[in-house]
Image 1 (tube, rainbow, N blue to C red):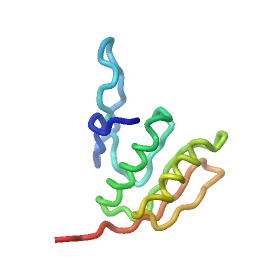
Image 2: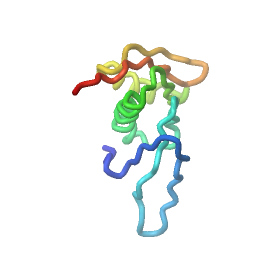
Image 3: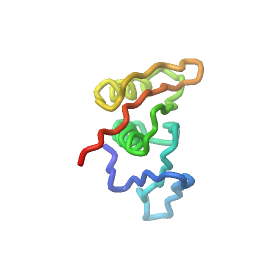
Image 4: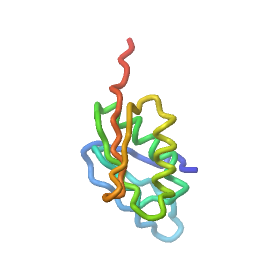
Length: 114
């Protein structure tokens, strides 16, 4: 499971590519919050936590639609992503973009309390 304490989701900053020097494996990776995320660079064990946190952060920033790129392959990543989306109350709907290996997600705006 992905330890979200080591994951920085940032807006308007470039992705920091991890290049672990010897003895420093697992350093934090900064990920921008944009209207898309490409899962190709992440380990399969990270996808569930990563997608859930990405959806949360995208909603907090007011995105109404995002694209999650999971690849075309055998459909394992797509199934994981869509399983997460089905359970998230902040997701209004989602649909496949099969020829692009992506899922487009329509998000609810975050509720304003206070």
